[in-house]
Amino acid sequence: MEDNNVKFMVWTTTPWTLPSNLALAVKSDMDYIKIKDNKRDEIFILAECRAKAFYGKDKKAFEVLDKFKGKDLEGKEYVPMFDFFVDRKKNGCFKVITADFVTSDTGTGIVHCAPGFG
Image 1 (cartoon, rainbow, N blue to C red):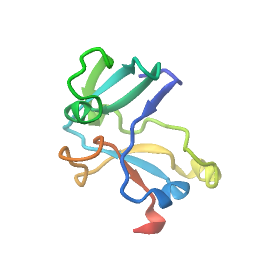
Image 2: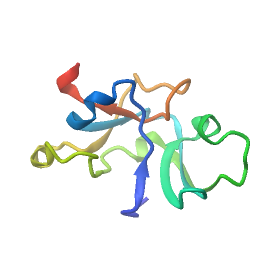
Image 3: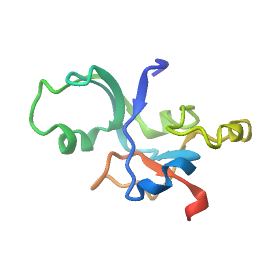
Image 4: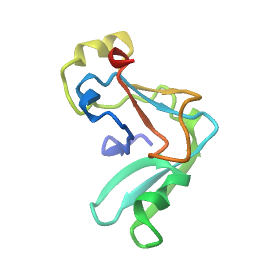
């Protein structure tokens, strides 16, 4: 997980709030995987139970590189998509947090958080 090229596959129903992102949320007891997306040649982290929703039944679409619980991601830093609030990093922003509102039935198991929007 210490690879700078790893990207979080994040879910949001409110894409207009992405410029105000300050954190990513995962569920502490959910299983997550680090995968190599063979089509994009990129490495992503997402909930293990949501991989099929994005990759279907194609077993060659991705390769699992690692598996861990959400609590193992807590505190990990990431680079935000937009740099409007990068100065807030010194205040603890742009880290993974754990939250009970993260679900396994939709999205990727990783939720974009923009507190300014509620």
